[in-house]
Length: 350
Image (cartoon, rainbow, N blue to C red; front, side, top):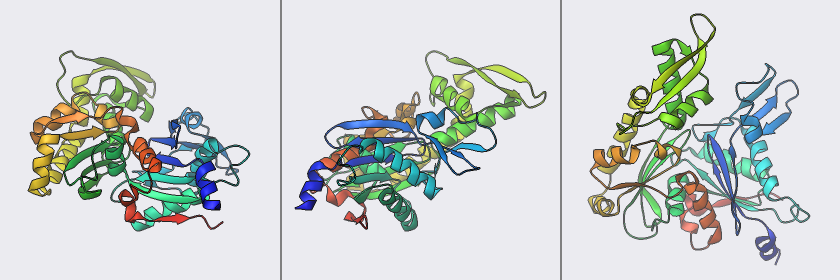
């Protein structure tokens, strides 16, 4: 009886726990939170000063005793306590109200496909400690495929490429399971680092991470564009120590990120090579689906299609595919139980 009540009144939550951004889906309401995975902490007192958007504004602008950092690195927890605080903040934001103490939510969390058992346990424990009643885990490529409304439970091949902030996931899915997959630590953050390194090598210019990301979004591409794009790159001159600005174009940025893009393309091709021929035939007719922020790089779908000789498309609203997938699992948990990791979960001790 109590379980029926909690399932009825509890606000079940789906979370895309990303390296760059955390998105939260509430059953029956949709996506209600999309904030950066950043936490600002006072190192003197250990107090959390800000989480999400407010903390992101502090990155690179804090005094020595305050750090604004990401508690997740390459899609996995690097600081358990800070991640727990961040999850608690998001869960409390959703589950506030008179009955929240009695009806704690069930939570589905998307995680990279090749994390270790220890890392899985860290996510589960952090979710339960943050206030969840039950914690379920789902692999991000599976969640993204469900969010992209791909027929993952059919006996047919579905190929998904999810390029996030910390990791890129390539997976072939059939009959509610992942047939073959690859998880790379080359994604949006690595492309930002490539741009920072390019500015240092070519112009003796020290760029901030946020500036590099802004440049990538504004003029980044992986395929020659019909019309050239330009942007002013501002930072500190490493020789004089004074402010400096340089005009860069899309061709220069394309060259800066080319090595990382090649590794991504090679991984996509290698995953196809490991796929059973019957599933490859399915993918040739259905095509490859791209999700995640990296899929929005200009020309990326064209490059993947050219290199794999398969039709390739970017999913509708690729930034929210994973969290929409967790939400769809929540909406029909009994039917989609098999897509969860080991079909198991943990309950809070209370």
